[in-house]
Image (cartoon, rainbow, N blue to C red; front, side):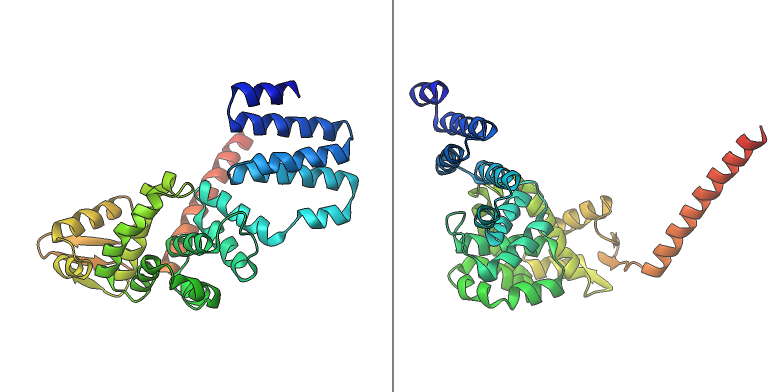
Length: 291
């Protein structure tokens, strides 16, 4: 109580919430369950941000599990809500595929407006899906999702961003991308990953474009995206150098030549390398045995 009072008088809201949570944890250890529940609930109300709220939820769930209180466990575990919390956690640690899958599972039965709004959930779902899922998955789970369709019309920039990407309207995609970047900048969960997201999204859209061609000129690709040839040259060269794009640029002719990977040959080469490594290890063991 003294710690809570001191925090209220001299410190900020975060410290007050932490002191309340600490009190609830002590009451739980003392087996004063009813009091602990009340204080945990108070800590939950004072919690700001997903991680702090999730900390309280997990502590309460652990307490009910120890007591084998099935009714309280059921009330505490709202599967849909947990998916939203977990999805936001994955956004925070930059695991966008995992986040996208959880958000997509949560959307049809969404009932967690106290966590985030449905519009925000759709925003996160679309962006994490675009940067991490393949085209077929995006078509099936995002483009044709009736739940997303009902809301995305109220989010015109997001709708244009998704539609232009899927319909290969690259100039429109790049223009809208600027507005999306502004929204990412203002978002608490996505802003720390802005540079990563922007780079990966550019890579995804370049891969999609180049998959349609065996060869294409830098000039034609630049026109498709509404940018200069030198910009495309710089972008594609950087991704080639980091081995993120499987193609090469002929500087003399100005051609980008796609080099589609041969999966069978790649598997064969990997098997040969592993076989050579195993033989080398066996030979070393044989020499040691001879000694």
